[in-house]
Length: 353
Image (cartoon, rainbow, N blue to C red; front, side, top):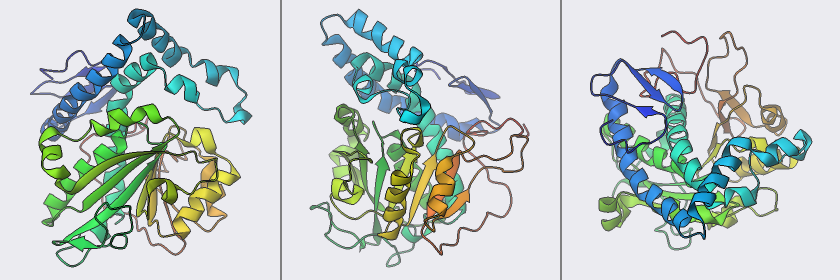
């Protein structure tokens, strides 16, 4: 990609057969949609990376800050030193706040989180998850009018439903960015107006907020967000605070991306189940491991679980992309194969190429 700006692991070309992204090869028969999204993402990252670079440069020794951040990112001392039963995850909250780690994390994880989320949303859309908010004028779903701290209310306005989404443990918010862009595209394909979006990242580490607020494109921000708002609120799934209270009002959907490593326990399962009992229509999950203990835990609470990846591959069970829904929800499997903008995401050993 001509203006890749040295982003690690990103190599593209106008006439491309294979795209190398975060060390994974994606066969791309039609590279144009993929390249268009990555170019757009690179422009976002120019703003985000400038902020992270400024934080590093503001330290007393920027070179040492960057070096130590890379050490934390690569060596993962907290994860390696803590017993698995401790549920410490990849990095501690203190490590997540380190300017050097954040700078490297953003450069690498922004692409991974965006592309994996996009693939998750494609699969969820095929199950009808977004249908209530992609209706013709007068049809949409959404939360009640005026219930979210002055953010414009719910229902519909000018034929556009309001969709309130929280990314649980969302950090800098690339899942939310991918959702906004995906729903914009999906609405165009269906010939309807996209929903207005109230997007909030709920995370324990507050220093992610400036990066989240840099995600909207300048023209969009100058126009009042085009019906989309990005917000940040501090939240800890284990602190006993309801995610809706932290978000400032009702929620329609929740996103979870690589968070279960921190909270695959019964209290966290109860939190997720309670959200689905309180008006949240679905929780969309993207995770690393092929077997997630959380699946059985939430099913014991009556939660409907849809596994979005192939369960008949050589790898067998694959829980990396999931939808959790309230009891009684129908999430029928799509008929036929899905076309993906980012093929083979997340990576599947047995997928035909």
